[in-house]
Length: 219
Ligand SMILES: Nc1ncnc2c1ncn2[C@@H]1O[C@H](COP(=O)(O)OP(=O)(O)OP(=O)(O)O)[C@@H](O)[C@H]1O
Ligand SMILES: [Mg+2]
Image (cartoon, rainbow, N blue to C red):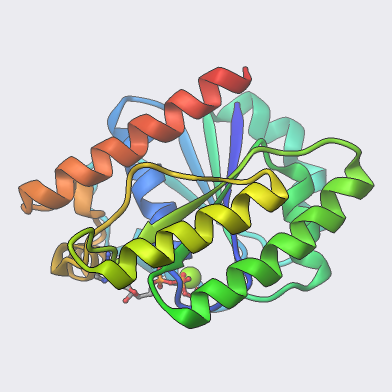
């Protein structure tokens, strides 16, 4: 079983979107998947309520207290192939706990100056937590709303890469462009991987494959 957290300090940076992409990717491959929703807004729990029974099954569990995760970790190990944790924004103790229980951290970020600063803030905390742990959990920044034809976006990518190197954190090769499929699919209880935009399907498949490959490399 692998635990993947979609985690960063800033709100609205595609944490929940990333969670849904990973969950639907692995569920679509026939894996047993559980999403742990740690956000008080419970967006993923609502998403799950809209999901058709004809689609691959994904269990959603709400856990506001990270100690609940500690108590349930053995059962999760027995029952699932992948556990994806959708975190809430902020750098509270809850976020550090979540990091410690994860096998892989995906740090979603939109192409914006605010996200650049918050990634740096998150990486500082990541560094502190990993120093306490005594080993580094693999972590990768995942960019969304990225357009490779815009110079400013390329500069943003370079800045994120440089920042990542400083903290031994990678940047995923796969990135999401700005697409309505990411917004519309969720209100239907799906992810863009299950929606009808071929470009979104292609880039989300690439994302899933890249994450799978990273997990294999650390097995
Ligand atoms: N590539 C994209 N194209 C279009 N819209 C996107 C893209 N990526 C993310 N979004 C949109 O950005 C918004 C924020 O995403 P999301 O809710 O996943 O962020 P979050 O980090 O979970 O927020 P919160 O901190 O409130 O939990 C959503 O409306 C989502 O559909
Ligand atoms: Mg969210």
